[in-house]
Image (cartoon, rainbow, N blue to C red; front, side):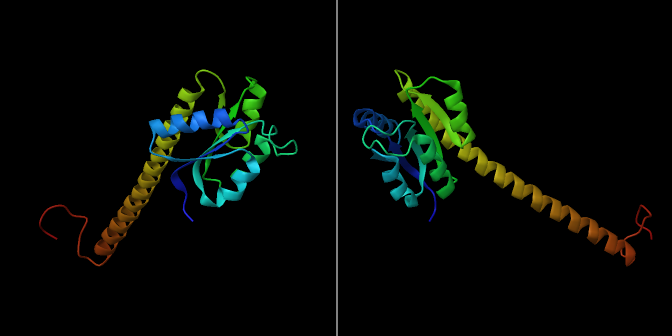
Length: 174
């Protein structure tokens, strides 16, 4: 199954925060947005291969024994490495942010008054990153084709010279 680039999952145990983020993302993008209150619910649907997951760092207010955001992040990256994960947290601690990035998060957003704007920018940056990644792959393929074409021209020139069809002498004579 291919990555669903137009699908966003929001995993947050605070239903109001999740719904507000969902409404905002639906207003500013054409993405399909699904909300989950636990990471386990998200993992059950991860086979859809969403393009982006907004994942809360603390996920234990609904179920006290729920996996935390870091555990869910690892599971998502294991099952769908191409899915970009943006961590959300009320914590403004650099070690928490670094830890989430170490496990593959694309970005870390501290919940607050600018978090909707930052989420919108994260979606834009992920879209731009994927576009650049696709362009880089195209340029890589083009350079490989160009290299092969140059090699074939060199081999052809050597062959033509060895068979006497072209000479080292300039001009019309031979």
